[in-house]
Image (cartoon, rainbow, N blue to C red; front, side, top):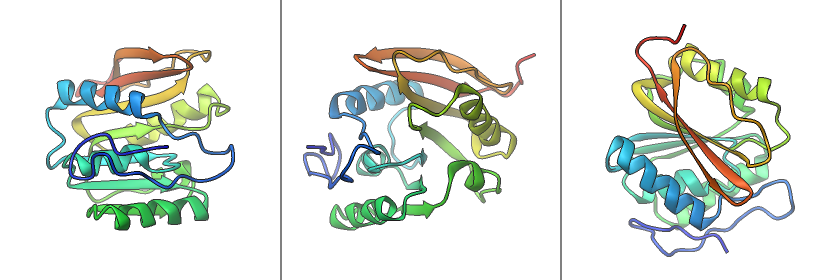
Length: 191
């Protein structure tokens, strides 16, 4: 069962989509993720959080529970997006905006404010080139604050992501079949 790990909704269960299309980030990985984020950016209090390929929404809902001011969830499947909305209402987590759209299409637009943290958990079958394009849209379309952190959740068996100019790789951590890759928005684009 997927649960919120900490914050105002800590310990509360989340309803997750049925089937094998969505694999919610485990409680253990989410706990490690937020420990690393707090070391990098400080407490979540007041931060703007972007959850791409949101699936169950567990990561963005965790951010709201820990004090993020807003979390935008981008999920293509309508039923799954509705479930994220329902979970946010049930947990009384304000600041949730759920967008039912493909990530690439949504990121091709310009958002009115920039995000401090972007979490990207695409299907493991999504190719490296497609993932690089998503990150390039984040950087090029000005979705990220000047010192934002981007976290990619990928299969441990897959290759390392290629960070585009404007992003610096900062760390990676493996948790069994899952690896989290961290990058930081750079003021100076890489050569």
